[in-house]
Image (cartoon, rainbow, N blue to C red; front, side, top):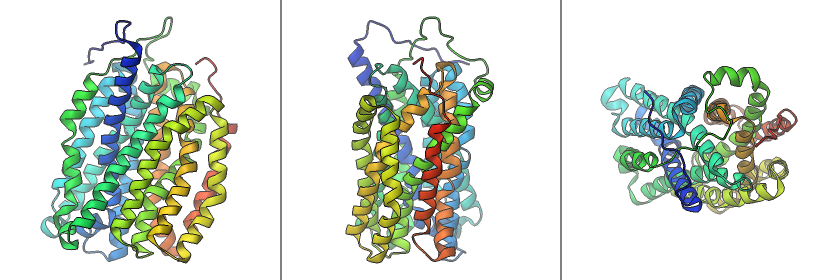
Length: 429
């Protein structure tokens, strides 16, 4: 059954309408990404609680693998919720994703440990991650497209950059909760019950988030434009498969870089470099804040200079800088050096990230746009983001060289940038 839709009308002041939509979309998306990413910050704690029969390395590897499972179902969420959004409306889809994310967070927060429930404990956590992954896969498409479709023609990159900024806000919230709890709670209390607090707080977002999103107005169909495709997935894969492939390839580079900076480096600093938990989480918090602050600025640049130039500049800096940054951090580990490395890498990542999101959403017509954005984004994140944690742990353990991941990410960035030769721009926007 379809939800009734209220279309944007001339009676609402344009600036007020756009500001309200920007705030509502950003807040809802930030809350969802807080729920999804906080699992990564507590990977070590979760490994100990739910995979306790294994040794320390096995616990972390299984925790990272469980984290990855949430990514593997993202394409399913991106496709199914994208189709739902293209047919029933963006607002209905965004409300659904928020509800599913809160359910998954509640399941993790209330799950019994392995010591008290045996194999049932990891099964519950895995099921929760699958629900969250399905939700996250369906979130990015509708929220990005809502921002794009309501933006003035000269500000599309700035509006869609708030998708990346809202992810930064959610990441900062997750990292802040991990940093504060690891600092104020004794080690035993953090591992016994303190880690549950962020998940239960995240589940409590549901009423607020649903209220915010139900107040969103739908964007009316343009004159002469078909409002929906009856079979958006078939249309996408038959008429736009080149851009689907190019979009996934483009996002590959940004995805592996983001998850290396935000999730792997703090875990690597705690486990391999023996730095304090609170300091490592604080650095991850800084990366989230910088992503939130710099993304709109990068969007402004992309509106002024186009999408391609900022992407090339940001990636060139990353390709030249990732390997030296790893070597410098590993040569004399400290929280100060960790902070410098994260700051220096998150800036060029953001420069290329905002225009990349805008470029991909502009590649497809409105009738299949949510399905396209959800499919492209979730495929890239599922394959490359989802495997980043377990592959990173395995690569460092196998090679015994902490900079092996830096080499792999650099090669991935080079290959990903070739996508700009594949995609075909949509000149009708």
